[in-house]
Length: 262
Image (cartoon, rainbow, N blue to C red):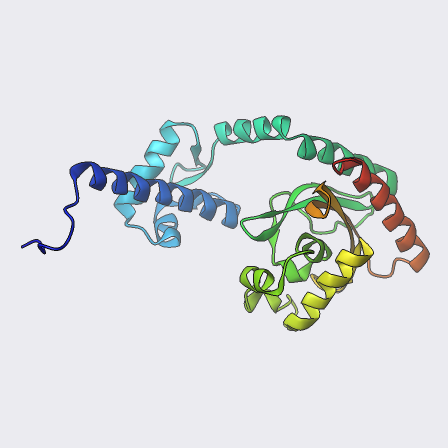
């Protein structure tokens, strides 16, 4: 029996709630595939998004029919489809900063011979939105779409510049402070680094993601004081101080050209 004090739920409201739940499931599927970076079987996908296999199969079939996902390999695994790629290219063409930033990153990599990146915040995570490899004989790990905990990066310190402590704490989990080699950063030290980066207008980190590289990053502004993105170079950790200073100077010039009013 329905509680006399509880408001009745109409059929329309139930349908709206069902559609919202289905949409959330679709977003979870896309986010899972983005995080895993590989084609995934329906069973593993269902486990990954904590959804019934039958529900996951139905949603995947709808997304495949729409061209947003495609069956890969033996037909038992699913991954992003060509239509999503085309939508992404539309976004690049419509976003002036990203379009010009990609060109600048490619040019910077050719000019310096170093791995160059354009990075932004995406869902509270540091994300490489475009990367161009350097000409060195060894390859530095850097891939477009890669998401890394903010405390591991020079760019993360710049992207959070201007935020108060509460906002920073909300975006950084305890696990984010643990580096790949097991060392744990102190939150107070990370917040102090953010303040310093905001004041100096650049940031250099060494040996955080791995023991062989350091990252040089400068901010790109969408408005005075608002960091929209960063441009960075990933270089060998033994790069000389003079070379490092010269590269930071070059980065600052190029990032200024991308910034609003630059």
